[in-house]
Length: 303
Length: 268
Image (cartoon, rainbow over all chains, first blue to last red; front, top):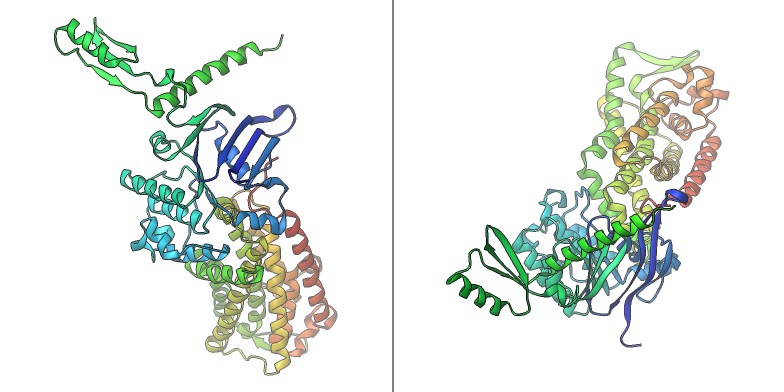
């Protein structure tokens, strides 16, 4: 098989607790990730992103559904097979409270030893922009610098599949842009990447496709430019009239602006033309999903 | 790389980390040395300690074996139980669990680090006792061989018990609260701070279920004149029992570790 799914998820369910107190974190999610793709999983806190990602990473067993990661079900792996599978993964977890007294270079040398074909330690340090800090102890670094160490440890082992869970938390804007360059470079080398982030611009910059999760279910999935459907991307024209803000969605914002200009006999007050960003589309989807969820919950009240 | 060579890689970095952390250096590495200094200095005016029909020894000599045994306990149980519980709660273990590092290599790294730091601590204790308090060291090579096997077996046993115990604390912060009282309690009833022969019988009985009492007894046989064995229970050093109790606890540690160790706390 040449076009290979690196990740497949079918009807994934995950509950915590048992019996009537069980809480569903994930209730039936489907998606696939193709080789070489950057796939972003988006959603509010508590939506089930982390549960989903940690099941794929092999940290947790699922309650139901089917999962394959690099062709195997992580839950079925034990012993040597499990370790061999892990050599093909890179995992950048959400930032932790680790107090590491080793230096950046010592940490990377150590982790490089865990993998059969590691990257060059100094090249990786340079790629995350920490060359000047290579001999500094990790616990003496700033939050953003520590996060770069996390990212470096994630791809030192030359992974086929890289998990990036909120990788740029604590980065300044410049560092984030450098990080985006790094991710594009990894993708260019053929690395498949599963990204979760709260920065929608980051997802828009990096991802080929995004999946949006809310309340444990997939709300929408598709290429960044198509998510939410064509309707969600219709531009908005906004202006002030009659003591309030008015807005209109139109496929022809230019014509509307011209009409407004004619009507006002000059500049319409506070005129804005907005093309919904991924963030706008996302917020709208999450909002709709919450409203539907509430309605459904009300209807489900047993007699 | 093989599981064992990865264990050596881990040992190298564990060792560096050990000496960069104040807690491990002070409360594990230096603690028995400081206690030896305090006890010896406190009683230095009281002459010698001995028993009926035994030529007494000075307090430095008397306390050295107990502190050596306590050092083994701390380097194994305390250092690993607290260290691993903290690594579990701060995310270190979760990160390692996402790499192809075999858990066994992680344990090899922990145990070898305890062995190396424990041996260094022992050397420093002996040096300290010899130079500062003029303690007479054994001249019989067999005694040194005895010291060596008790050290190695003791560290491995205590290390495995430390790994097993690391599953108990619910958080890294509570780890010291769980482990330190336990370790202190054992030191008081096992003849580290208080002369074992002067403890009430029931306390001696309780202590004899745990490894520290036997390590201390073994170390007394190394460092005290042979005549002191008349103060022991049964008037003998009972080195066979030392080995057997330590081995039994080693098996307990192995089994519990095998059954309970997880890189992360598993959910339901």
